[in-house]
Structures are given as C-alpha cells and as structure tokens.
Image 1 (cartoon, rainbow, N blue to C red):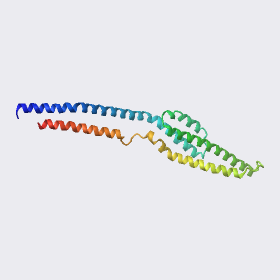
Image 2 (image 1 turned 45 degrees about the horizontal axis):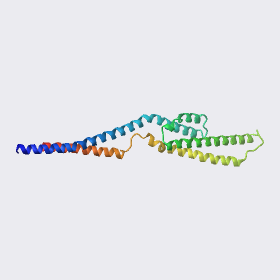
Image 3 (image 1 turned 90 degrees about the vertical axis):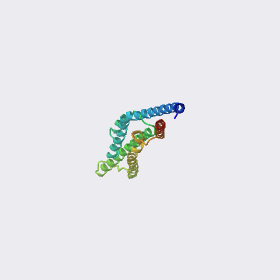
Amino acid sequence: MSVFTWICMLIQQTRELIDYAPFMAMTIAIVVALTQVYLQNRQFDLNLFDKRYKVYAAMDEFITTILNGNGAMGGAVSKFRADTAHAEFLFGQDVIAFIGLVTAKAMDLSLVATQLQAHVNAHLEFQRGVTNAEPPTTSIAKLNESHSELMGWMIKAQVEQNAVFRHSLKLHHERLWIVRWMGYIKTWVENADDNLKSRYRAT
C-alpha cells in the first residue's frame, strides 16, 4: 500500500468519524437528559412514599376499626381526618375521592349503628317492663337492612383500597416506553462505536 493511498484512507475514515461525532454527541446528550428526568421523577416518588404510605395505613386502620366495632367509630373518625388532612397534596383525585367516600359512608354507618342500638335498647327496656311503649319493629328492620348494606360496602372498600392506592405506592413499575427507547439508543451508539473501532483495526 502506497503512502498516498494510506493517507487517502485515513482522510476518508476521519471524515466518517467527523460525520458521526455530532450525531453521536447529540444522541448521548438526549439519552443523558432523559435519564436524569426519569431518575428525578423516581426519586420524587421515593421521597413521597413514606408520607403516602401513612395515609394508606390510616385508611386501613380506620376501616378495620369500623368493621371490628360493627359500625361504631368512637374517636376513630377524628384521628382518621387528622391523619389524612394532607392527602390532597400527595395523591391524585381518585385517591382523594375514595377517602371522601369512605368517610361519608362511615358517618352514615355510624349513625345507623347508633340508631339501631337505641332501638335494641328500647326493646330490651320494654321486655323488662321498664317502659310501656313498644318500639316499632319496622324501624329495626329498615335499620338492619341499611346496616348490612353499609357494612358490606366497607368490607368491599377494604378489599379495593390496595387497587386505589397501588399506582401511588408502587415503587417498581414496568419500564416505560421512553426508558426502553433510551436503552435502544444507548445500544445503537455502543454498536456504532464498536463498528468504527473495528474498521480502524482492519486498516
């Protein structure tokens, strides 16, 4: 191989490398930028996890207290409201709506449970001769029906709460399309770099 031919080949390879360089640099910059955005979003989710989980735990504790108390809440509702007061800053509208619905249903159930217990007590007093006024049996039947429906709703809510909170609490997701795309670009750049190096070695 003559010196002139060798110089021509070197110039040609240099031109090819120069042609590749801007595109490779731009591609790498895009990959780095997208990776940083993705990692920042993941870190943001991790930082919020503890605060979000506390709301989830408060929800589970609240529903469990209601079910164990057969609808009676006591001071559970006040604690639940305090534990979830900041939820609107941590979750989307779906979780906020779920929290509001559980609270409303719990209040309805507590009222029905209180009225039902009052009717039961009134019947016991009538049977013992404490009072002569017999409470209407139709009221107890309706209250029992409402109580059963609301308790059933609470049981269902406890089962569904994981599905409602899952998106906000799930730390490991399937790779998003943008992450897969970044992986493809990275592989392509590495292959292009290997191809250039192999061409240099061949000459």
